[in-house]
Length: 339
Image 1 (cartoon, rainbow, N blue to C red):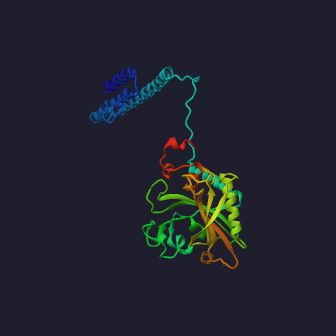
Image 2 (tube, rainbow, N blue to C red):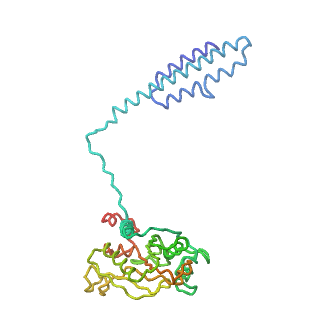
């Protein structure tokens, strides 16, 4: 058995001399040192030896195992160095070649204009506030002076989760939450996604974006509203932008008005873009309804305020003369790379 162990070491050395890959090296290790390897097979026969022979044979077996393991480790290091040398010879890199230019992504035009709006309103002293997109009907409707029989509360127009929870149809609920948690003076804008049950077409989407504004303090008047929105329009579209206000009706404001800008395509003469009216509607606004102030714990005899709501997609479409809202969401680089 001693001779068999010693000859096994010599045989292993011979096998290792011809190894040229990591797979062949692993095969040699398993052949001699594995659970079913040759050394294990010899050790299983030690039970046939006498008590006097076992210690000597066991010592030789351990020495042979250690020697084979050392030879394998040495071969592994040499093989690794050889493979690295071969790769360095074959995988050369020409450091004088120009690198590959990775294309840098751009912000979606919606995000670009939203950042511009942030700069405009932050420059006028507004703060940015946000709120949940899944909202209680109280904040989305009741607190905004929208009664239960109002058309906007119809299940065909609103995404209801339960009778008391909806996907918000506007960012106005953020205004209610702000008035509940802040004392006047309040001067905030509330941007975010909103949801309505609209079929997708060139001008409608069930998901779109709004930026709503709210100012509440003592002595706030319609003149403050008109001045703020005129500054906004001129900052966004240019100093020569003309605006007009038309009477309208919103449940949460009184009086209410929609603001138009003079058509930048025809200068007010009338064209297909403005439907030959010379003006383009861009937002709704008004003085905060006294009932809304009361719902938020504010005395309308002491405080007044104004609010406005801007459809981001509509603003961007007007700014860049885009005629299909779906282009913002289709990830078509031919469109996005223009901005």
